[in-house]
Image (tube, rainbow, N blue to C red; front, side):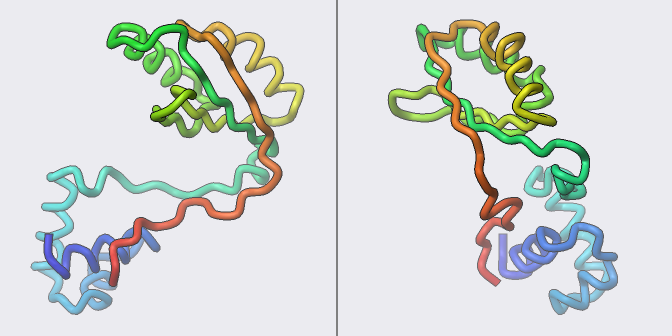
Length: 152
């Protein structure tokens, strides 16, 4: 990956809807080499897709919580089953496996405290291999969807 690839990625992180013509201009390449580079970045998996960033409040998802999960036992099978179960819960918008006392951090969005409580009681407590759940409510999002620091 060279300087042009990094410039392409930086621009696409800011605006994934840039036309190839505009992108080529912004990174100082002609259209054909820019297109080849974008296609190569897509095919290699560096670019995993394109999406729109949504305002959660404007789509009725005003409530957000972080749930820390400690598993009863941590082995290959329990981790795999747990991660598959987490992947099936659409209200979990981010799930990360952690080092330390807590095994996972889940970022959960819902319509309200009431709908979060129902999700918690019905789905989160039913996740396999759970020893402990510890939740905290999100007061305010300060940084979200920040582009990766590729350096321009």
